[in-house]
Image 1 (cartoon, one colour):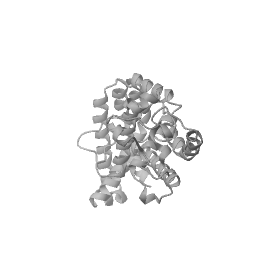
Image 2 (spheres, rainbow, N blue to C red):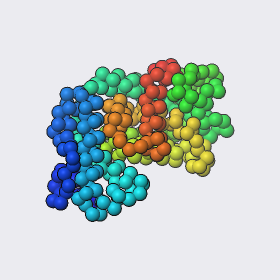
Image 3 (cartoon, helix red, strand yellow):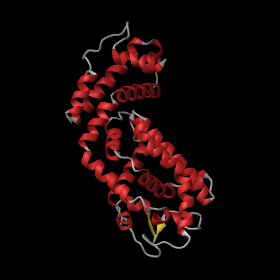
Image 4 (cartoon, rainbow, N blue to C red):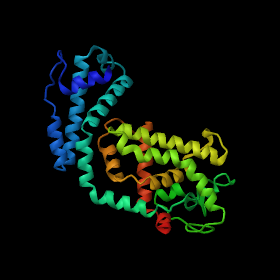
Length: 288
């Protein structure tokens, strides 16, 4: 019922609706701006359409009016629903335009991941999981710190080294990562709305938490992000989404909800860190 109400508001099909003071931009106008690679104009137009649709919904639908005039949390829930519907409806135009703008960046990042298809967990220190030490350290430098721009050290069995036990351990870890890799590969084809894409990123992180608990024989509560991040880097490289830069930009530009203190914001930050790590990490350059 909520989706039907949003659809009616977004398309102007509500019979008792109150027209907004300023007509919202049409979907055709937004698509034209997107196709012309006018990203700033597209973002403004989509935001205006979301706001207009939210106001229309609050005026025209008694059930939704309760949320529109309710608590801040209820209004945020309704706003998220509207944003996801409106942006999802324009997905082909918006995402397609970003893929055109980012063609070179997408291809370079995709080639980078394909060139790392031989990457295995022990390259990022995951071989130490369950071994009594830090799960993501090698030579005292955490993989997460490297993602923040620190220089990696490779002493004591660093990148490119492979002991006799690494291969078997790697295969075991990769089997645990398979659900996460599958989710990451499906994001572009399965989801149209930015927040929906972040939900799938969250699913992949949940799968990695399960993998880490198995590897370290710990409870989920005892698993830290330093344990999960190297696993996420490996999974994202092996998933190799073909339009990863465009997907990151699409989520960043067309998510209008406040992400600073939310789970969605954490997922977006994690995805950004992974992309930056793949682009510039010294440890991955050594593994190439």
